[in-house]
Image (cartoon, rainbow, N blue to C red; front, side, top):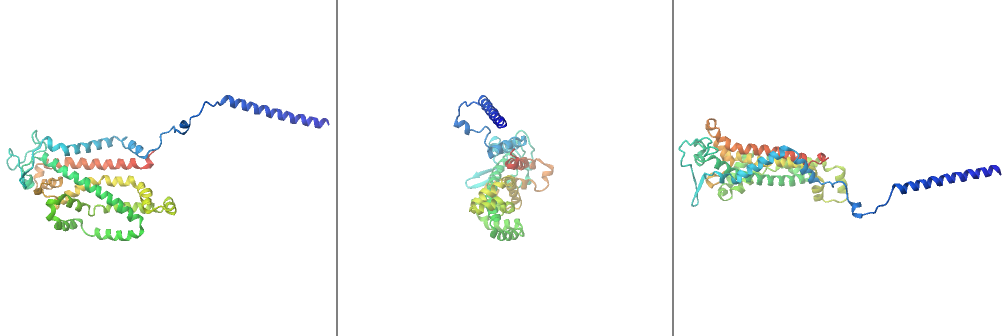
Length: 356
């Protein structure tokens, strides 16, 4: 009996100690934590700023000083392209009724070579520059040509990029289309581009006076999209059979949804890199067409940088008078460099891996 009583006292003692510990814990909890009220709006509010792809993209982009410099260069070129002829303008061409005539400067005599000065900021075109440019103000000729060349470059680049992305995405996604497009690319690549341009221009030259801009755009865009399309096709083939794409197909996603939501967003950065060089590439392509007399006609009142460069390099006069090349190159070189580095910067900024 004594032993049993002793065991019961031990049990009661343990219960008392457990109760004391429980009470102490509850007392500490009540002291440490107090309810001060709740607000459903505050509960759902995030302390961190929500992730925004384009906000971070533009933040990363404008962190780089060279991007600001490139944008300033492009803005300056566009400004002078629009307003340059209004600042110090000597019209290189005049319209007499329905006829466009050459308009040489009245105070400059043949052979017309006058270097840059206070009156003629880019100098005067020499007699080596053909019937339409000799004796005209280089400043007026360059910025008048830049206007049409830049418009042409933007139009051609936009068409090439859209066609390249659409055709390239379909080419890479639909397996049945791949052999057809490969055969087409192989066939086209075996024919010199200049030969195709000559053939097309021979057919379309009677319509140049009325539809010159459309015809030149057609010449440059006829096969200009093929390079970007092939690049997009290769990238889509690489990521087409990844697990998340197979899962989307299994769940019944349509081909359009797969391409626009799963494939193309992955290629934004690389597409931007290619697209950024399309504008200067289109302007340079027009220079090539002008060299072979396949571009706009000055006799129709259309002046481009390609025509100015082509005429300036005729003969050897540009070696004695290098200012003949200075005017066109002062537009084309900064334009090309600015678009190139801006494209690289945008490609880095649009890459989600760089969003920390």
